[in-house]
Length: 258
Image 1 (cartoon, rainbow, N blue to C red):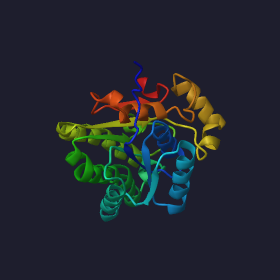
Image 2: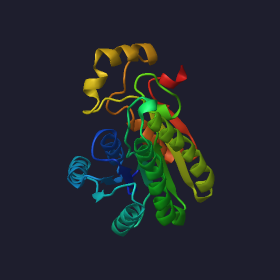
Image 3: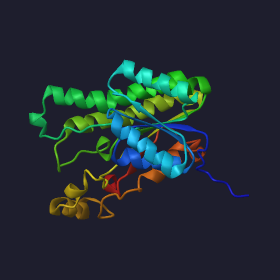
């Protein structure tokens, strides 16, 4: 008898930062396996558009929830709203983030604090609310934090010390939450992507400088294409990963192996 190890039928999945790029791609991958999708971001018109696209394409129920992940009250209210709508939260992909790029010596206090507030503290706030209000009571959950290969290593291409610090924090936050919440049958893992093509990155990644960098620094000698992050998200969200927790999975073409 065949078995679909990635079947998510009936499960409710939240994807933050789901207005553009990788967040939308991962949401569509989960919808393709039958999950109900909650699109979360600050820009209401974009998440409503994405929710409709996913519903039309994959014939699953969707729900758009506007939320600033740095605001604790709004995060708690968003989780309450989702629970009122669906009665459960099975999967959370913490994808919302930002990136301050400047030489470390020129980074301002506000830039550093802002990066930590969004990428690290915002990730924690949504995980905390989803776990406390839904997953711990249900004794089940899949939390996937989107960190970065730059949470594992430094770089000489573009100074971004606050981003490295915040994503490094996400990497170890993932381990800490996995250790604490395993007893509730909640797995907490992170994905550490390298550079991926999106409408916002295409021009930069296709530049001569970045193309040469790919050939020098990445064993596969290229950047990630649309869809190449999806299988990692599906694996960690699905019943196929029931014994996997506290893992930080690079999806970077081999960048961090050198």
